[in-house]
Length: 286
Image (tube, rainbow, N blue to C red; front, side, top):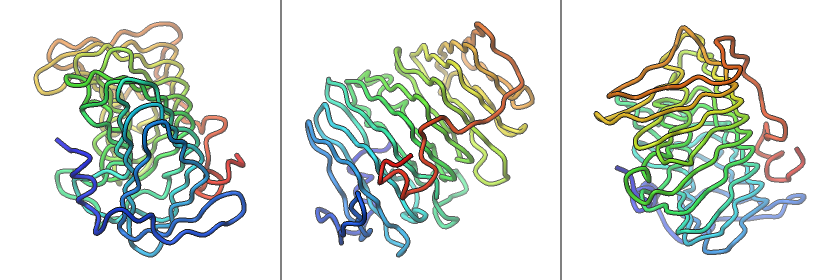
């Protein structure tokens, strides 16, 4: 089990925000192994995190009602295994992550044989509030794109992933557990032989809602994987297409219920308003 402390320990130093400079309508922060904390009620926006020098950054949240907006990550993450770039949690309120680009992914040094490399977003088990994720682009991470299942049997916090895109990440792309958590208007794509993780992985207790999504796996791994560690859950799949060859897996008494216009002819798409570059995200120009 990961922790925010473990995420912070993966970097080489703490506290300082690194070298920053203004560029257009956003601030450039050069990675230097630092941890950046977004605090209670704070809005952290219009930042470009530059990882092209081979260093990394960890961003963690504290308290409630914070916002992370218009953030682009330029360059591949190289920080090693068992950590996360964003450690997120809301303590009973409602927080927002919107217009974020992590499409450059992690490099080959970040992977391990077990697949436990760098996670893009990891939700602390203590998360007890609600987090909205909107227009986030995550690609080529060696571990989960959104690891949001940890609060399921702990803090009980919910996560709503909306209008987001995830591609070619290992373990899974969207991973949730808590009743009230959902994925809507989003897309998953696996189209290479790199990090071919599950499309959506639902853990107990659930249920998890998946609505108006396209899950295109090109026959790799599992499109919808329900249940884990001997505990079942329920997934409600509504107006969603999934890859029939990758299919649906139901473990430990899990149930995946298809509703509405659901089918097996997925067409992956980039949701409108989702950034396709670090600069676009940081400036909020998309």
